[in-house]
Length: 555
Image (cartoon, rainbow, N blue to C red; front, top):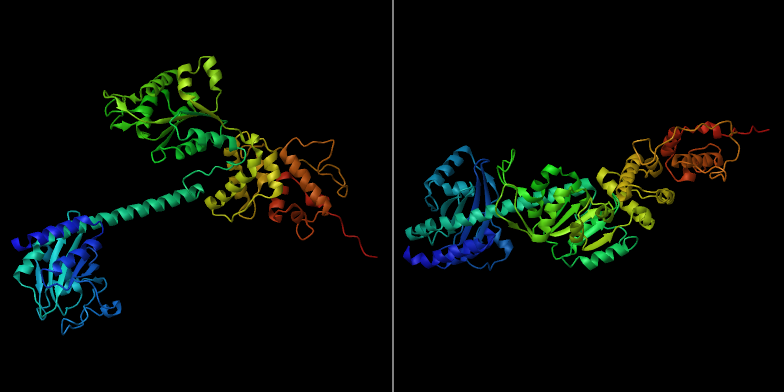
């Protein structure tokens, strides 16, 4: 084998250089072609549990010079001379139980099999190829530590024949090809994991009604234009940011925008709700703990600061931290280091802090409920996020965005808010801000069942279901059904949204003489589905008979 030492070194180099086994096999086949009578090198995968042979690679020992069509000859076609077209590997084929036993026995022996044309048919080579070949073959078994099995097959024409030194060389090729086969297995395993992760990502986005992980900032050119300008100013720096905003106004979205536009965008973004952490667990949550530090600490745990290293840590609801927790947080911000609970070694971290709150922190500092020194550390660059009622120009695009998201989440036909719906949304005060608007649109989409967005019902649903409590249905009273009705009487301003909707529907029924469907019906006038109109009338206690005008008998 000394004559083949340089060749084996080149084979090992090629087997380890390429990630994909196809590339390394192509090069190794040409290397072997210069030192032994090789026409083709084939690599087969063996799934013995399912009794299948799967061709993986077929590589010529010389650069192909014939047309591809001429190379598609069947494997069993005889080759009378060396100029005849070289065969191609057969497709995947099953193995019989007897063949599986033959292959397993051969692989346990780890010996090179030599097949010559006309040999006994119980050789393992015809079993692997699926038919008696018309060429001479050498075969070597490949078995990795993780159970991947294969076979290295090398062919030549009968006139050339393999000799004993060639068989010893193929025996020496078992190890480099086994390594290449294991690398190929790992590559396919990573591809499968990546595909599974992508499928999970698409499924999660579908459940969330989103098309991408990065949050879409609606109103960046509208009511949030000033905010986004400040985001662009502070994002490239490492300055701590303090975001003020009412509950549901989108503070986390702005924090993520700062992270995405910063040099740390490739690092982690970790959000911690300070108000949701019990005071006795604040140290463990923020800084982690060592195994055995306290009862129940069965393993070492990294805290939020450690997980956010080289990234951004959002401390949401920072005003809810207890005084003791404020002291410990201040120390980390000053020193950039901390110790896990039960640990003795300081851990250095490089974390950018973004804090967010809906509370009046300056007032809390004045009355002693929030540390002044921590306030100075956090408020390096304050950003005030306006509430939704302060940016009503963004309600329409937000509603359209949430409507599209709701359609994806609930599997409904996409519907967009109508002009009348937008008027109702714009007139509302939105104490819950964008979070409440998203909930209303979701509810409207479900109520509309893919036919429309039932905004009015979603806004004025029964108590506990929506933002506006529904009063008991009014009775029509003694008003004559034919009496003209004004939708907005000057002396009676509706006190609730339900009353306004009721008056609007009654005005439409009066104008259409109680007709609901058809070209001249109230549903067409109100631009809603007749079934939706009837449902609203039932909820509000409106009887369409009160508005019907009897047909005048003909004379």
